[in-house]
Length: 257
Image (cartoon, rainbow, N blue to C red; front, side):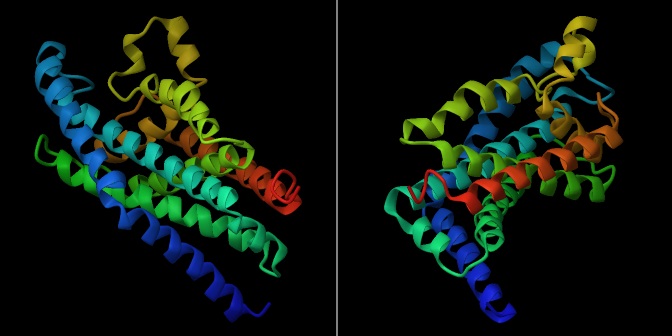
């Protein structure tokens, strides 16, 4: 295929993915905003008064980056897992695989749709957060880098989950039993410095912790984990999951059988 044909195919997939979630914005873009409002009302205003300041910031300021990142994580993952599984279910993906279209283009097309939704939801939740607290930006480039790396990583994870899922229930196993618990235990609502030493070490095995703290560092300049370690982990995991996703799509086993 020529460069023009590949570019057209890629843009077509991305546009289709964006239209898919924007067409049903009441289900995809509105819920994260409402959930964020509830978190600020319950945790920021009510519980936050009892907790007091954390890492030199009031509680609402401290949890704001975590709430934004949590929305980005959930939506980047959800978009790809539902879209790719739907393509499998309706037989659309089979046509893409047997076509001359490179597997990389197909994979990046779906992933880009997840990243687009994650970024858009992140912007919406950030705007909502501004009504409840003052958002500080310590380093805009760290904020942007962590968001893109995290969104890309979770989109890849959603792709892999959708590849192996056999039923609609199969799409919910990872979000319910893995992604959800790891997110809530990833330092969104607290600093791991508050935990006993043993549980601090256990928490450091949670990759979500580095996503949340890297993002928090970009906003507030404080974090429980070194920013260099955060980037090392995010880049490494992106490379590993991309290679896994590419191998699965290239092989096509479970889709073309």
